[in-house]
Image (tube, rainbow, N blue to C red):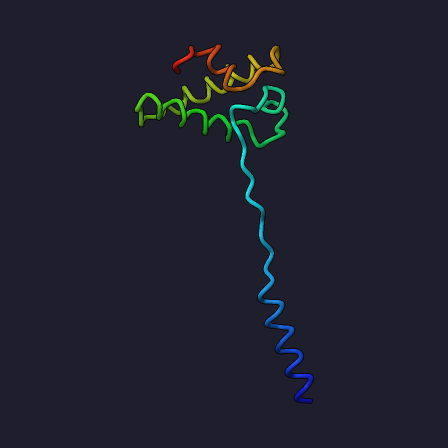
Length: 101
């Protein structure tokens, strides 16, 4: 009986020691194509647009985000990407809003 308890305790400790871990995924946003953006291949396009908004606003030192402008800009990028599926999303943003958006 003691051997069974010891075995179960060891198994329990071993089971607790092995935890499921999720791999960290990194994405080079500069390489995301319009096709991947529109087809939700990477993530929801709004997530990518949020990151891009933060990136470009950070470059300008702007800490204010207009929600209505964000939605309009997201729609502009989506529309541009329809006819330019192989271009990168960052290139699309530069083409629509200017190189130093």
